[in-house]
Image 1 (tube, helix red, strand yellow):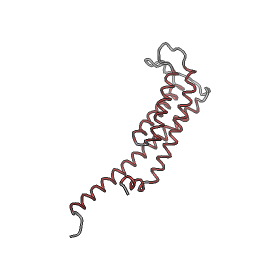
Image 2 (spheres, rainbow, N blue to C red):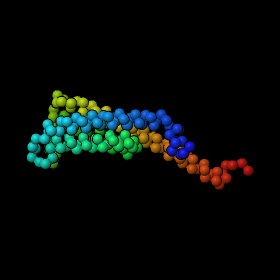
Image 3 (cartoon, rainbow, N blue to C red):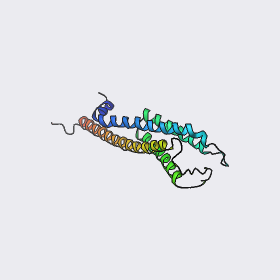
Image 4 (cartoon, rainbow, N blue to C red):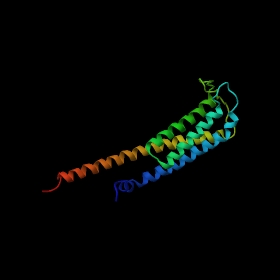
Length: 171
């Protein structure tokens, strides 16, 4: 049995939980992306600059799709960290602009929208908040697995080195 296979056998439950979290988080990011792509045209009105809220929706949706795919194909700590950032900033933005009239920020348009009554705004906000929570849990678990497998690999290296040098073997 190869070293990687032994590590998977040693930590089956955390690996299963990590994969489950990656599927859930990817699905939540996909919901968020779908809503943003579908509603982007509603926010393409002229704001005095090249950056419209519709364009920001499209960029956010594209990034969410890429991160969702990364989580499904490569659920490592770096993918999880990016997912936490993407979901967290999206959730933070929708909550901020729902309750605070920030105004224009440099080239960004004023995105204040003091209502939850718009189509699928609640769904998108729920998906973003839930994705932030599941991605945070996935990041923590991925770091735990990384630490445990690194510790097990280090112990195995030391054991092999001791066996080669004859340390700890009866004479």
